[in-house]
Length: 122
Image (cartoon, rainbow, N blue to C red; front, side, top):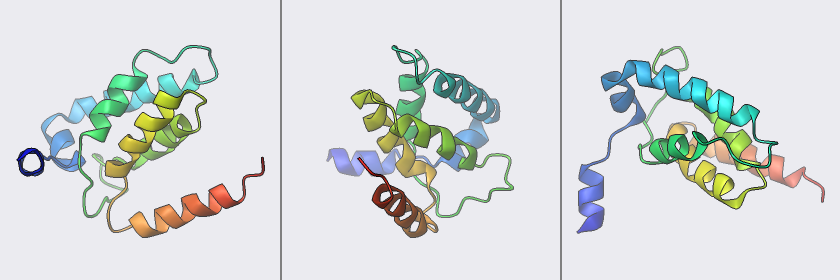
C-alpha cells in the first residue's frame, strides 16, 4: 500500500521547480554555501534539509541543461557532499543524487562514478 501511494505522490524535479521556480535558485545557492563549509567540524544546518528535499523528488526522463529549471547544477554540489567524512551527509547525498540524474543518462553517469572509484588509491 505504501509503495502504491508513494508512486502516486511522486513529483519530478521539473514539476516541483515549475511550481516553485524561485525555490530552485534559493536551494542551489544554499547548497553552494553549505558545500563550501564541508571541511568544518560541523555540517552546515541547511545541508540535511536540502538533501532530504532533493531525495524526495523523482528523476525526470530527460534533463535539458539549457532549461532554467534544470537540476544539473545541483549534481556537482551533491557529489561534494557524498565525499564528506560524515556518514549522514554521504548517505543523504547518495539518496539525493538519484533523482537529479535523468534516466536517459543514468547508465553513463554510473559508469563515470565507477571509473572514479576505480582510480582512488587508499
